[in-house]
Length: 149
Image 1 (cartoon, rainbow, N blue to C red):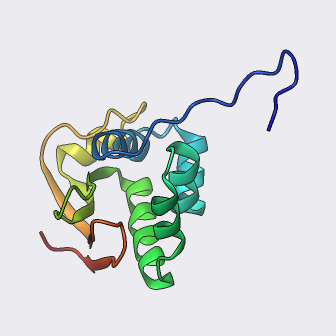
Image 2 (image 1 turned 180 degrees about the horizontal axis):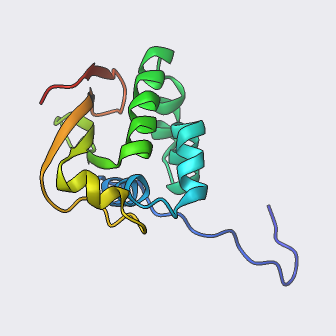
């Protein structure tokens, strides 16, 4: 698609990787001023992924193919983190190593810091896993379970 003269190119989105996903998600879950992204996560976390990161065709297809139970389980955990703050740990698959996504609620001082104005974010204390998902090297075959290490 050609741009018209004087038209700005669309903003570049970063490629999805473990560090970027964890860092950006943690900021959003713990900073209540990030209203646009927080609203999008609450509405549809897969749309958040598509809008925030430059996904490969395989990543996009894998997210679209997730079964409704998995999508809803992750959505419920994300909504809980939006309310109370918490932590996201993401490890994307590498080689034969599977990927992992853990959404955990903050406990103790972490929760107080997350709830503070400006959402100071996690500082210390425990993170209690709400949901842990694993997936294969092609970002398919997701298996999620509530809680646990």
